[in-house]
Image (cartoon, rainbow, N blue to C red; front, top):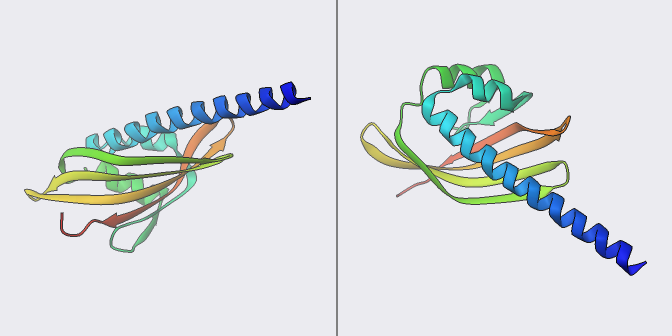
Length: 135
């Protein structure tokens, strides 16, 4: 009985580790796609019900988000750090901070992305952006 429980715990840990690794990979892809204006990447990885709360408080859906990506990021030298991945079953939160230059000035945005496991693959279903003051 204990061996079966230990095996179940080990399997759950392995699945969580796999999910965390995949979500780190997807987060990296998300940031790179943003920096490149890669609409195709986002179209493939965002759920049709995706919403984004912009740093100015405006909320947009997938179509408007893709239009913004197509228009170009308007930033340069994009990097990111402070990444935390929190799997919650078939949903996961990814927190991080992007750093970039906008209009020649350094700026940063803290983000939280919500990912959902759908049909065996992770899709971003929500993003929330907050400007980081005083960087």
